[in-house]
Image (cartoon, rainbow, N blue to C red; front, side):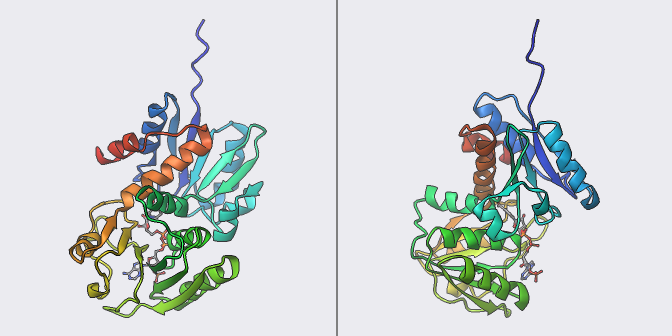
Amino acid sequence: MRTDFMIATTGVFGMPIAENPSGVMCEAGYASVGLNWRYQLFEVKPENLGEALKGVKSMGFKGLNLTIPHKIAAIPYMDELSESAKVIGAVNTVIITEDGRLIGENTDGKGFVLGMENNGVDLKGKRIVILGAGGAARAISVECAFAGCAGITVVARREAPGTELCALIREKTDSEADYLPWTPGIKLPACDILINATNIGLYPDTNKPDIDYESITEGMVVQDIIPNPADTPFLREAKKHGAAVFDGMGMLVNQGALGVKLWSGKEPSREAMKKALEAL
Ligand code: NDP
């Protein structure tokens, strides 16, 4: 008699969620290490988050991602938080232990750091300029600071999130941080790494951040976190100015691969995960 009909469940809670491609990417990752695991999208209303997380425990999910609007709201339901999730103040990945405890982790910024490492960029001592002060900017800045960067300039149009992020970096890490108000066509301070952590350029938007592109010089590293499309107008312009450019799809794959590894203990093929995304 067969006893292998049970298939492990992982997934993501969000709202809206239908356009989230994580399932395709993670299932390709599972297949690459011989796991017949599923990754389902669950549209969970904010008022149902607590009940849904109880379900994850009682039904023995193997792993869970959280996306908008649950990343911050989920914190009180976690039994434990990683250092990153604690400092960032948001959870995007939940590890579920054998005895049903929920451990909140944040891999948004870790995916960025892993990408830099894989591309041979050492963050130690680097000067970073980041555009935007939202959730992704927060996660990336904190991880860059943990990885030993020298300083971060946060360029954001609203002062409150910008100064709050800088205060957080100065308070919780050894990195310097300063806020620069985003004025149209702004000339950016000299830096080693420039990151677009805004929504600008996300499909169907075809704009690029309103900065002085002469600020980008030969040898700089420029990262866009926009995963779709991967080849953004921002990166195309940065390339014209001689920068080494890295796209948001690569970062998304790294982040997804970290989740697969945290849940299964196996290192998935990032190439297979990327191919699955590109085929969409
Ligand atoms: P948030 O809404 O938390 O933050 C968005 C930030 O972009 C805010 O600071 C916002 O400023 C700023 N912004 C948006 N439009 C403009 C504009 N026209 N001019 C100046 N600033 C602008 O979103 P997230 O940080 O969660 O996500 C941002 C993007 O990153 C999303 O597109 C998401 O898909 C992508 N992402 C990619 C990941 C990857 O692995 N590749 C991982 C996580 C996110 P304001 O507050 O003033 O509106």
